[in-house]
Length: 87
Image 1 (spheres, rainbow, N blue to C red):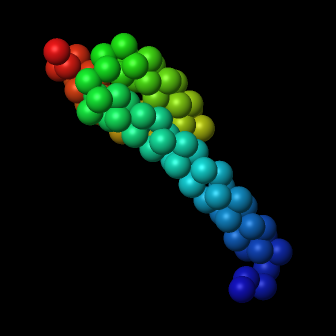
Image 2: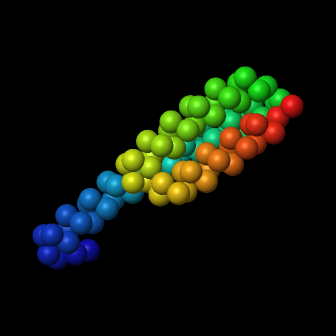
Image 3: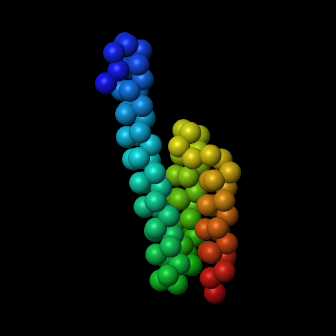
């Protein structure tokens, strides 16, 4: 454990941020899974709605610094492409 007060604070702050980032990433993964499930089920309307919801969550995660903006763009692009491919 750190001895200096500022180092102790950094450890606590890092722990707090790690927990927050983990929660946000988990939520994003859940929304992405909903899109994938709708695609697998063949329900285009549900897939489109799930895509909108997932895009909102991904964008918010990027603004909070959890994901890089290019990562979010790539993920949204791949999901959109998969939804558009549906019959």
